[in-house]
Length: 305
Image (cartoon, rainbow, N blue to C red):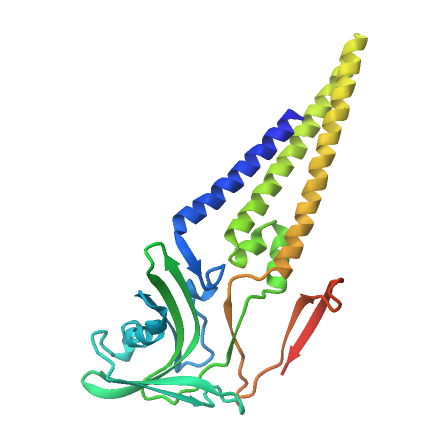
């Protein structure tokens, strides 16, 4: 029993240390989302060769002006093969709302940037896809803006995108194979680490208690002292109970791991809709958990054309 208690204490200590270490490392007062969006580390791939996804990071003291600052900084992050110098300044920014995605009834806010490329005036059209910000301990803000940008001289045919925190079966099958893997995939690194570490600790507890129990059971047959036999039998019962507790906790943690992998929101990600050759979208579908009456849990199916 002492070994089991020791393992639980060590696990809780590690969890506390990881949590504190993450808080100390980040030093963020507040953020727009609990989890950093996945598109910050990996931008989406466009379905249209004339469109590029461009990430623009900005540092500012005022979030109100962050979006304007990002548009002015956008030129520094455009593809090099567009031959637009990063030292160019934007003369004007025009904002309009139009059918930029090709779907009737869908109006997107599109920006036209007037600048120069290789000395010649040129217009660049872009559309913001998503943004994320976090406030540092010194009061300043780090903001990130993701844009779709049309190549110079091309007709802006922007991808139709959506932003979601759902991952469906992508997280479920990973966590079914390795507990915590689905959480890592969704960007919940702390939770994934705790689940993986807890699983490893409980498996170690099962192996340790079973090994010690087996050793005491062996000693019962090797001694003729009645007092030792009673003592060893008591130890067998104690470590059998400890092993069963570890097995029960392991099973409960595994079930929680699966439910969390499919139901809990993950890092915000950008979904780029497919286009057919004629511009029509293919049908898409998704599964997600829901509670129709607020008491029970069910799976919903969504089909989009």
